[in-house]
Image (tube, rainbow over all chains, first blue to last red; front, side, top):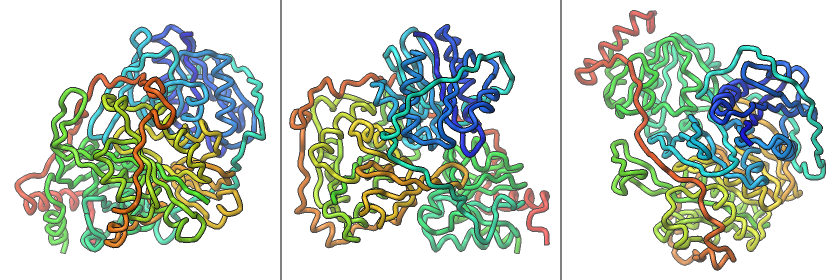
Amino acid sequence: MSDVLAIADHRRGELRDISFELVTAGRELANETGGDLHVAVISGDTERFGEQLKLDGVDTVHTVNHGEEFNHGVYAQTVTQLFDAVAPQFLLMPNSVNGLDYAPAVANRLDLTYVSDVVDIGVDGSTLTATREMYGGKVETTTAVEADQVAVSIRGAEWPATEDTGDATVEAFEADVDESAVRSTVTGFEEVGGGDVDISEADVLVSVGRGIEEEENLDLVRDLADALDATLSSSRPIVDAGWLPKNRQVGQSGKVVTPDVYIAIGISGAVQHVAGMKGSDTIVAINTDPNAPIYDIADYGIVEDLFDVVPALIEEFQ
Amino acid sequence: MKVLVTVKEVAAVEDEFQIAGTSIDETYLEYDLNEWDDYAVEEAVQLQEAGIADEVVAVTIGPERSEETIRMALAKGADRAVRIWDDALEGADLLDVGAKTAILEKVVEEEDPDIVLSGVQADDDGFGATGVSLADALGYEWAAVVNHLDQDSVESGTASVRRELEGGVEELTDVELPAVLTIQTGINEPRYASLRGIRQAQRKEIAPKTLGDLGLDAAAVENELELTDMYEPETESDATYFEGGPDEAAGQLADLLREKGVGAQ
């Protein structure tokens, strides 16, 4: 029992990036345990996915041909059966939105200890050490798990993707899916956030976060955007509060943007936000908290109150 | 129809804080209702106001201190609350998903709701797993990361929901009831408790229960997780900082932006 089983993530005909990151994390773990790395892909075009997952470091790819799109009822049953067949020491799953929808059920069904959203993992004998964030990213922690078998979900973009092809064996896995236990049905997908503006097309974005405090203060950043001939965008809390429409949201669940200049105002830089703007050419951050993670990726920073800096900046351009 | 909402009091950490061992010193913590749970409570109360839910019950696992926070859920419209705490839970610095599942499973079995609403995750430990784990343990159906619930569908025995996927895509899903829905922020606009609500909440019941009351013993919540280290993440900033006060810094930033052609008419 030293193998590692990783479950690939896909949507609407494409393997998602985290699938290739799971391979890297899985290979690291398998090197520690001395076991094999198994990767499973469930539903969709499993023939093509199976070929794409024959990556460096993978020993066996298991393909489960059942339906097109993700369904947690199918996944929960299938992953449980794969786990019993492979009998791995570690089960790796993605901490994606779909991962959130099946990984806890699998862990419950298999009575496994579950550690979610890890950003680093190590093994010391029979102890797994997982690095995780707590308190909204304010601290990092290490958690030791003493168990023969453990279920883990990994955060996206923490491991590099494995891209090189290897010589894995691809095997079809015959899952026994009880359809009467599949009690939710996906009826469709919808792109959201259309409308008056496409922030992903903008060259310059003035982006506002929780630090703006009140809805009426938004006029301040609107004025700045006007003065700079820039487009206004925001982080999640502003959209959640209903102050700006969804099409203005930058981040994991919003838009991915890559402008020439991104000015983050009162944005702390949570990982979900950074995922949507880290590809910007020049990043400027204005935030009173010198420890805010936004400064980790900023090229330029001003550690001052936005209510002092922004009016001064507007003045410069009038 | 009965709706049960799982709520949690979480600690938020101030900008400046001190870590002692594997925890943060109490003086730097501020306790509040978990942000995701606030949206779950609002969704439940809206079902009640629409005449779909007859009763909304809030459930929490937490020490006596958390009653103040739980009372906010009652002030916003939940009818009563159940609070589970036990000496066996006192020492654990991290309660794992299995333990939370075991406790909540017993409460849900007693209450027998049609819908359980829980937040997608708690802001402190950030596991994001209890709702789905609970559903599986109960044999309930579920949906994770729900950002829209069609109220009318609920009465037909199937909840039509939207799940918020990555990249601005939503999945439309029909979920058979009974079910657990994990609620994403932004699904609604959580109300502020009214003065009248706050007064009424003082008279609403918060029933304390121990593990023994639920027919569990300490072994059911034994933890396989041990927090061994806690530290502030290393800052990797190699940003150039503009200093000298807001005006001076704004001037330097303006020069940079002009250099990059920003704001040029």
